[in-house]
Image (cartoon, rainbow, N blue to C red; front, side, top):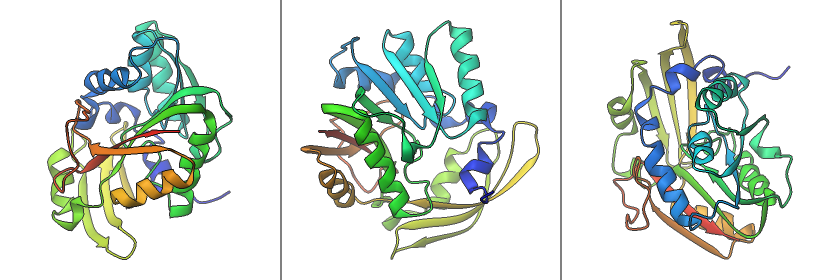
Length: 255
């Protein structure tokens, strides 16, 4: 059996704590933005990649959309299904790897928000496989909306200090931060508590991307239009130009 990666260890038993993180509080506003991008067309089929505990998938289903959510973590999906049952909404939640999605030309929109797998992989090739796999799942002339870590941010700011200000009730402790300018990867040691109050020690490795990289990757996959904006918590907007102050970027691509 292969060694578990840091993100697999984190999400083994972290679903409840995840829903308490500060960055999960903008779900409704983010779904407002998604609806605008698809002109509120309830006939469209939506794929939520790296759906986690289902916060976007459930909210969109509540609004009348047909949504499929896929995630690597069965623990996160278990909580997602519980929340969907409690809210009396139907979402098709599937356990699977974003690099090998079991779909081809089935969806009108794909979303991948809050590092839904992308940026977390160990290699650039793996991250690219996620983009390729999602693209394959889309019908022709459809949209792919996702967020990615903004490579412009760590050139001007301390990632460690920023993450410290965002930590929720888990009291996460970051240590040993190093940002590699050759690979645009941030390495750190993370200590936090799981849902049972047990400490987790993780060696985190995340990939930051600059806008030109994202554009090139998507163009190579056949997207005709790639637009990149600043990703503001709870309020994605085309009015927000990407700057060095944005920790994440919002990518809207059309095949």
